[in-house]
View 1: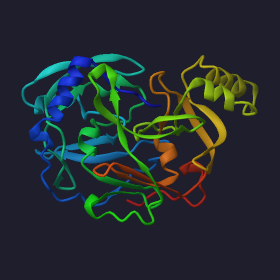
View 2: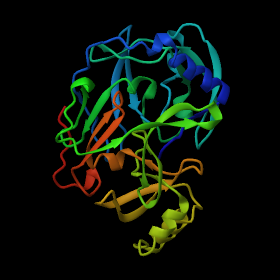
View 3: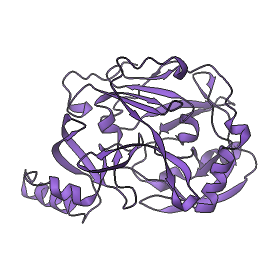
Length: 322
């Protein structure tokens, strides 16, 4: 299940202004990290987890989350982060809690320092959502927006590509990327979006690209109800649970036979309700049916369909070797 992170307007604005300050905006050319082997199950129900490290050598498993505007670290790391700069509030569907704003530590991936913002938020990650895996952080768009990332689920690899010499041939269909703006935070850019209909159709609008959602995505509740006809199957208990989810009486994903999106057919999709102000999201389970290239510097998304069923159901899929 996706935990949508929201922040206190004043605290988030302060944080993002720091992230976009001249010091943070002057991108220094650094070596690109080598290919990263995906964790087993990523895209087939599990999130993408990358193993970073701090400057002192401590291991730092983090969720790679394009739906998170800012990088978050677990409170257990607080003693390593220097002087707290301020506080804000982090909200999720489950709860809310105070978060500290700290200077960003240097984060390394395979020995290569990552470009990031000027600060990070610190909170009790497990408290935000019971569905979080055992990680120590969430790597957000303040870092990821500097890179061209390719998610190759067939090969089980994350690649950092050279955005200045990217050849779109063979990458699939291109979609111009923009960043959604949060009206509550004075129009600050926060999440990557494409202008497109949602997974279950409807009017075109902001479709958020969120690797931190382990479902196929989120849509408006009325779209779920419209597509649920004929999907009630199985035993009595299963049908009752499905009905309750479709009607929004319980907070769980709704399993549907499939959908057609951008002219391509997909089977066995799982969607939940998106928030009223931003109902349409694409999640990792849907992305994993493609070769995905997120060219943030040039603001382009490329999708090349590699399967119709969820990754764990594709007969040709094999877990990546370690």
